[in-house]
Image 1 (spheres, rainbow, N blue to C red):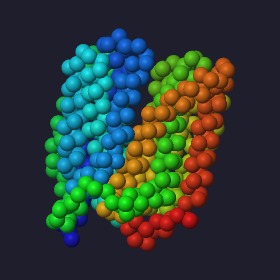
Image 2: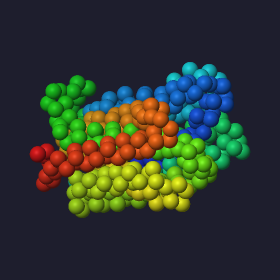
Image 3: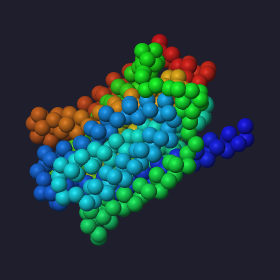
Image 4: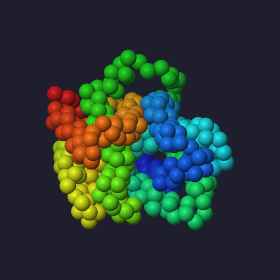
Length: 406
């Protein structure tokens, strides 16, 4: 028993280290990718958008299949292949001078990251019983968020002094230790546990077990929340604060930093609260905080006024991101946990893909600056709908994965 606990603890630490490096590696690309495409390839905005979306599109169609693979064969093999794909994607981005090769490389990179993030969530969830699962996932994702924060902070600085391409080379180099770390993970899947043959075929029973009401509700809530996260915070808000309010990009940077701090704290709080008072109540609390913050978005006129609201918005996202995977993991059998997390993350990626289009379309179709207020209030409405979905759920946790829906 002691050796088993030590093995679980070691794998958990390895997953945290690997996840932090992976998020740091992605973070140094995030702030420079669009300027890189624009500058190095003289690409029009449409192509810039296509290049940025390619990562999410490839990732979206990979989440469920790699989750299924991890259920059948264990997490190790798909994560190793995924890390190799990420390394190939990064070095290709560094070397290529062809825009279409760049888009393909980002897609390959997206497949590699999907393999880690989907399976990583599923594997961490499998390491702990339900009463400890929330805090384990919350801490895992909070530390990852810190890695992303430092990566984003360093990415612009590196590109300013060493050129835009250097970030891709650094990401490729960082991919090597993550590959070595994944190779040390012990994880076993159905085939290894049963010592028998397994099949990639998904039975109708497995499909129904995964797509139960609670997983579908979690997917819809995640979709709406990610539309807000990518559509509002990452797309129209920077334009709103710089062009409408006249704030500088540096001031917006402080606002984003405030949101990131809130997200880290939200992951930690969400994980612990979901183990203590239940997933449903914790999710409801986060959605209320998010709805209130979005409802206030139209009123601040300075970065100082915005910062506490951005902190609250980050808190909402952290609580959601730290709690929902545990909710999904509880709701499906152990043998289908990877598929459940894969379904959840597919909707996460879909929201990231369509969010900017939806929110920018709302602004474009409205007259004047009021379009931004309409977009903020639309986001608030989406979170109220999500809150209603959470209220309709009824969790019952007596064994691993026993949650029912009223």
